[in-house]
Amino acid sequence: MKILIVGSGGREHALGWKLAQSPLAPEIISTPGNPGLAALGRTFALKVEQAAEIAALAAREQVDLVVIGPESAAAAGLADHLKTLGVPCFGPSKAAAELEASKAFMKEFCVRHGVPTAEYKVFDDAIHAKAYLGGREPPFVIKADGLAAGKGVVIAETRAAADEAINEILFLRKFGAAGQRIVIEDFLPGEEASFFALCDGETAIPLIAAQDHKRAYDGDKGPNTGGMGAYSPAPIFTDTVRDQTMEQIILPTLRGMKAEGRPFVGVLFAGLMISADGPKLIEFNVRFGDPECQTLMRRMKSDLAPILLAAAKGELAQAPAIEWDARPAVTVVYAAQGYPDEPLTGSVIRGVERADAVENVVVFHAGTRTDDTGLLRAAGGRVLNVTAIGDTLQAAVNSAYAGVQVIDWPGGFCRRDIAWRALAT
Ligand code: AMP
Ligand code: GLY
Image 1 (cartoon, rainbow, N blue to C red):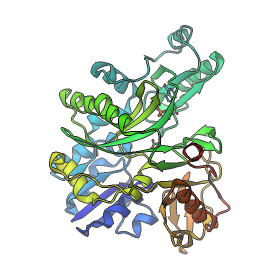
Image 2: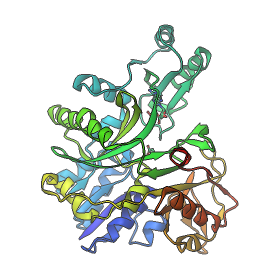
Image 3: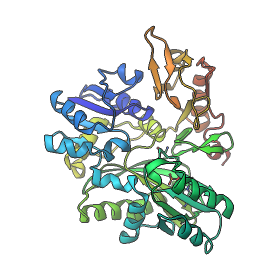
C-alpha cells in the first residue's frame, strides 16, 4: 500500500506517524512534507495548491490513497483532479470544501438545514455593515468570508473597535481577498470544543473531541493564532453533547451536502460552542484541526489506514468501530518568536531527539527545515508540536513540558498553561 500525504504541518506529520504504524506497512510519501515526514519516506516539492500537479504525481506513483491535510489543497480542487484520474482520496471536493472556504456559504447552509449556529448577516459594504451593528449587542463578531488561516475573525467589545475591524477587512484588505465580504454574527457564550467526524458522503462516524488554545499567550490572552496547544478528551464534551452534535449538526450537514450535490468526503471538523442549551456551531472546517489532530493520533488505537481508505471509497458503513486509548493526550505548540504577527524564521533548534526520547513524548515537526549542514531550523510560525500521553491529564502535561524543557531553541516560545481549564475543574 502506498499513501501520499499532502501538507507540511504538525497535523500531517502526526497523520504520517500514525499511518506508518499500520500493519499494512504502507509506504508513506508526502508533498511538500517537512523533516518529520521526510524521516518516514520520500517528499516532493509540490505546494499544496498545485492540485493538477499533485494529482499527476499520485497517478505516476500509483498511490492507493491520497490524504489531504490542509483546506487550501481541498479548496484548490485536488480531490476533483484525483477523481478524474481514479485515485482514492481522503478529503473533500472543491464544492464540499465551501463549508470552510466561505463562511457566508456555511451560514446560509446552516439556515437551509436547521443546523444551530449564531444569528448573522453577510455584507460587502461598510455602511450597511456598520448600520447593522446599531441593532445588535456587543461583543460583535466580525469575520472575513474567505480562508484566512484561522486569523480572519475579530471579536470587538465596542462599536468603535467593530467599525475599525470592518474598515480593516473591507477597505484595507487586512485578510486579502478573503475579506471581499464579511459575516457579522452574534456572540455565543460558552466553552469551545473541536469535534471530528469521518465522512464518506453518506455515512458519518464520530471520532473524539479535543480543546485547543487559540490565543497566543498564557491565560488565553493575546492575538488569535492557528492554535497554541490542545488536549483530548475535552471534559465538557460529554457523551450527551456528542450525541446532540451528531444528531443536530453532523448528520443534517452530511444529508444536506449530499442533497445539494456536494457530498462530503473527509473529516468534518465542527468548531463548537457548548452552552447550557447544547452545542452550537461556530464554524466548520473540512480537515483535521491542527494541533487537535496530534492529540487524536496519539489516542487512536485502531489502524488508521483502512479507515481513511474506507472513507475515500464510500465504505464507512462497513468499517469496524474505532478504538481509542482512554488516557488523555496533550500537544504543546512550540512557536517561533514573533508568531502570529511576524514569526522570526531561520533560528537553530537543537535537542528534538532528546525530547522524543522522554517517556510518553512524541515530537511532531510543523514549520521546520533541515539546512545544508544538517541543522534543524525554524521555517514557519508554529514550528514543533511536543505531544504526550499520560495516565492523567496532569501527567500528560508534565511529560509534554519535560519534552519542551530539553529542546534547546532560544528562537522559540510556547504557552506554559496548556490544558489549564481542564486541570482546574
Ligand atoms: P472561527 O475562525 O470562526 O473559528 O473563529 C475563531 C475564534 O473566534 C473561535 O474559535 C472563537 O473563539 C471565536 N468566535 C468565532 N465566532 C464566535 C461567536 N459567534 N461567538 C463567540 N466566539 C466566537
Ligand atoms: N486549531 C484549530 C484549527 O485547526 O483550525
